[in-house]
Image (cartoon, rainbow, N blue to C red; front, side, top):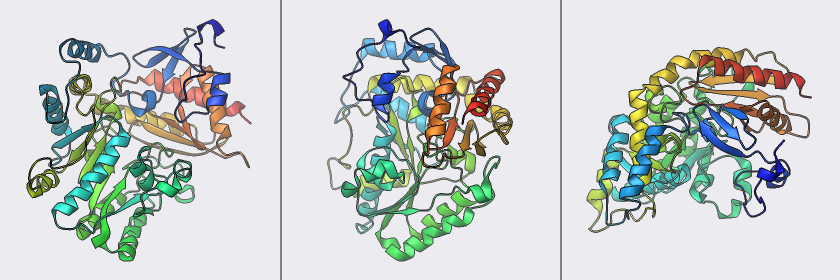
Length: 441
């Protein structure tokens, strides 16, 4: 239990994506973090099995990043990004471009994944206008997709609770593919499931319905994390790429979660061998030390917009904090850590250990599926009749009480530890989940 003397006044803060009333009755307050662990206000160490929110890929409290941010604060705390610049933004853009797929070497900085998605959608529209294809205004998303909380992102997204409260104000020219998750065909798959590549063929049906001349872009997460670790079937992404290329439609990969080592490669594009036209980035780009996001753009798209502009500003878009000096310092320091410690390769090497540990939950009480890819695993539980999500919520709290932090979405537990995770920490994580599930009703 929390020591009431150490709990601040909780009344003023409206917390995001949180059941505020329940939380404030039993708050879970963190005080510090280092390496693989948080420490709560009572001094308990909490194993972080979720990299914060899929974002602290290099582990907490990295001194190199702290020092870089501190140095930057003392020399240039802020510089406007409109009609002005600073060296750090150009250096960070070059460093990000260096690890993107070949050709995606133009970088637009944002402050979050939500902003990155809205930026990518705007760039797609601007590119088609530059080609004289102003009729291409429609976007195709996917059911159960998560693309942030901007109006563009929730429009192309497919998570019902995120959409329904704002349904009257969403972008009108949007359609959705079916999601790829199937317990019937793919339960307990290890890595990419074998069934489901044909689901990409739905894109041809949507193109026939709307006509390719009206469609600007398709946006998908190569691996959907926030909706419950939904994996792309073998051949699925390849089909999407072939169909979009055939019809002159841009393909956007939302890699806010998957980029920077989560699957054991710099990007999911690299991991799957499928290159989109734009990639949205955030989270691990700065190890979450300073809010930052970006869009990696195929050079031809960038150049098309630049060369078609009559003069002056080419894209009327940007943010006060685009390329913020502190964020750029954090990005450069983070990317140096990834390279020096070879953390992407380390994640690839640790993936089989996580896979084996996760699939030991097959047969454990309530577990109806385990799925994994890279350093990500989803454990789906049977829903309680009439009370979906309550079992995972209770598992989340029970694991936290035992010193393990995990994520849950709907009836799925999600784990995505920092890339520095050790064997014994993986063992402890899944042993705790098993122990908790065996005691849950």
